[in-house]
Image (cartoon, rainbow, N blue to C red; front, side, top):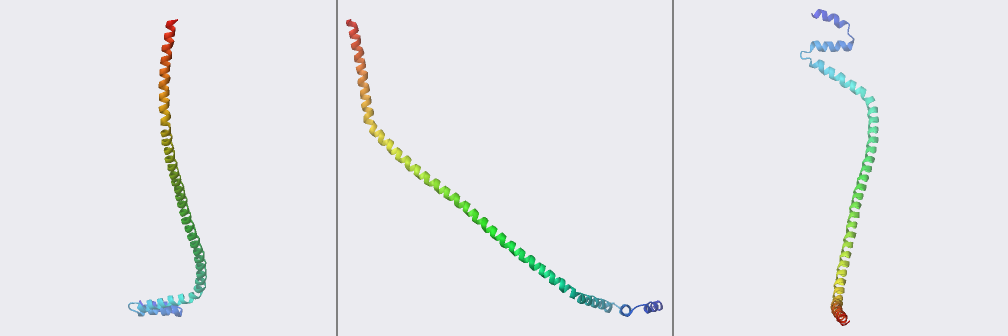
Length: 158
């Protein structure tokens, strides 16, 4: 009942009395909610002084972290470039080894062709000697045959 609420109103301090009055008088309580929102905003505004200091400290901390991260990024970039350079040098070493092997192959092929030419020349020069050897061998065999036949004839005469 309204009479009971009057007794309650007498025990409120001025701020609470204002809030309860707004609650009671406002049909949709928009005045009460607006007042609560204003109180909240005022508290945030007064609490903002402390927040400025803490936010300033947080900004400084974040700036230090940012500079640390930037140094880390630079270090990582330098590392990436060094790895790329190392990979390029490994490929270059392989290429140089390949070139050296290719040069050796060309040299060996040249030596092989030269050795083949020398072999062909030696075989050409050896051909008349082989023919002379074969003729001498045939004469030796004929001489052996004649020697045996003379030996047989001598043996018959004895």
